[in-house]
Length: 387
Image (cartoon, rainbow, N blue to C red; front, side):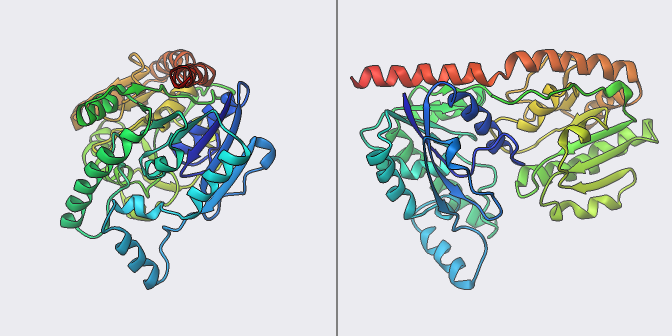
């Protein structure tokens, strides 16, 4: 089977953002089973992909990065007709690349990843296509930065966009059951779930051997992450420090400017981007990862569970990563979140047991090969119907 993949970033297991690593893991397994072509948006700083990795490859430059006043006006002009994030990923080069791929690569089917790329579904007309939505029809990083009224307008535009574009796909997938239910209610059609897929860590962490440190991890361009970091430091961390005076909270991840001032709080350290994530996770006892906004699948939580690092989070933060206790402790209010973290920070034995539970569950549930087989099965069903 020849599959054309359309993505708003470079799929890469080692990507610093969850979507890139999640799709990268699936692609690695799909390439063992099918011919895979790629059309993607190339962001500044991304290394060009090696053509040898793909059966066909085409990239278009990302046009949404801040630039001159003329650039801002162009984005605002596009915003008249579509959500601002969609406007930022609009490129005249993508339809041309899709046309070339259909002519040269001759795909049997297509996979389209993420909401902003649904704008290109008309270019795939006649080709059996599955759209995978990562955040229930409204990406959490879709804020306009222009105020509350502008954000409300943009949310209305997202609803129209989803209603108009998503039905052009033959099948729609979400990455959690909660997101699938939300999309199904909005679109009045079946929405399936494509489970998470990640590369297992080579060696498990040893939280029992780590000092009493907790880790929060995220890309802080993503508003839910810097919002969560601030609430964590303001509402949860003081309760933890009251019980564990020597505990330390590490805030790691790229684009840390929005949270840089949190490093002034007692027991809090802002690390920014850390290249060796395995070593970082091996230096702490738990990942503390509650979220209060956003949708989709929590790749950072899954990565921690795979590494054998226990997770303390809330229901929104646990989506797609509902490992059994004590591997993943799900609590809602700040006091309960703090209590769950204190239990692990104050006991090496408890942290060790929780890490073992986390690792066993995650290795079983996040197999990229299983997800690739499921994806091929769904594409085969579409092809059978088309014939």
